[in-house]
Image 1 (cartoon, rainbow, N blue to C red):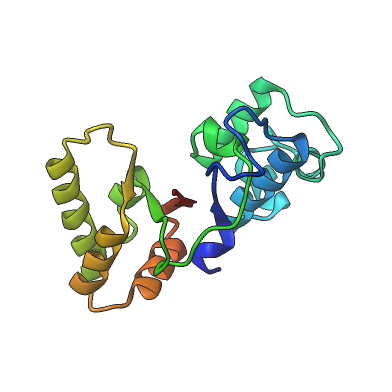
Image 2 (image 1 turned 90 degrees about the vertical axis):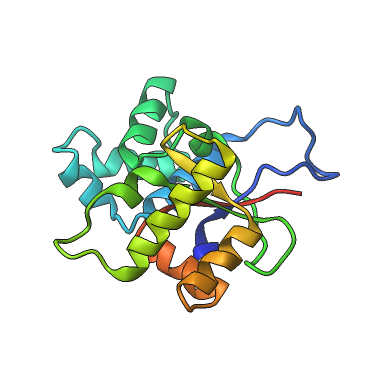
Length: 183
């Protein structure tokens, strides 16, 4: 799945003001996109949660056939390891890596997890680069980090890839929370 397949935005446009609310249909679409971006089927979610989240119920949330309570939204956001705000924001299109407004949000928790006995060199480079950015920005929240276009360009240079290739690599390893369109 390409990085832009699960790109989202909350940018203000002439059609969207600061006071517009997300619709239930947009939340349902967002929920499906988050699940799919993590490579999970409805059945896998049910299996992994030991039946706490039933496939049929999650499917009905994703179709907008069933109302999503705040309690259940928090449970789903926790399961998918995304902030509740990401679940409740409306999905929109996002620019490609070379376009104005491109921003990547990295899940630092996933990056720090050991993914195998031997860490690949690109992963080590990523961890070192992100630690440097955190130090430069004094951004110590420890859960997510937004990369700017220049950061992605530098990371591509450090890993001998293109911006598109490094974005795909981040996506494939589920290091991305989302790609945001910021004006």
